[in-house]
Length: 277
Image (cartoon, rainbow, N blue to C red):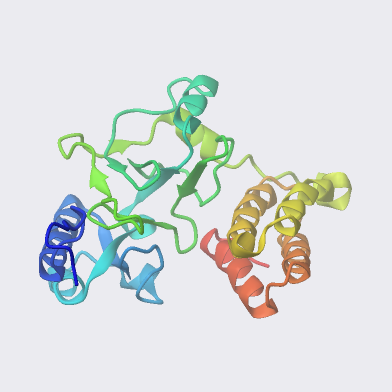
């Protein structure tokens, strides 16, 4: 029997009220110009397998998705023509500012379960999902390939924390030139001098090591991270995509991931970043 003095945490509310709040936020995001799609409630996994093509600003679709079942909100970067900056390590924001003065400007910002999301208008340069020269603890969701996505405001973190816009009156800003430069891959070297023909493969060693040293519950997460970094280095001409794919797949199999799961993770990262294997 429940203690009559027990009070539920503030974030535990009626499902109907939660659906209404999330639906209202999804509509507000659509009015703002974002393309949205459903994500598993209190999670980060898309609830529709073809989210890159299903993300929409259609109000009827938004009502069907968020007015009935309980879902988090996904914001699709490519169709929305925005780039999302996911900062989830304390100090990473300040470190980036110190290393690259002027990298951040006021823009639409969402407070998350572990940090913050910054949204910027996508620049002319094609920004992918790699973090470029940004410090660890900052990830980027860009517009190359299928593009990336972020769990949007109005969603509920697994901890119960709400993803909330810091200030709706701060508009979506153009990406600062400093940030665009940091995120833009360097031009690929000419084939005759590609590093992949020599010692460039040494750059793969740290990424493979990350996968091999991963504990069981973090294997796929570390593989995903290593694949994102590999995409950057493929763009920079350090080695060929096929070389990265083969090395990461072998490392994933070595730590016990199935070939199907590992191949799906690596291929998914490569495909969304516009990299052909």
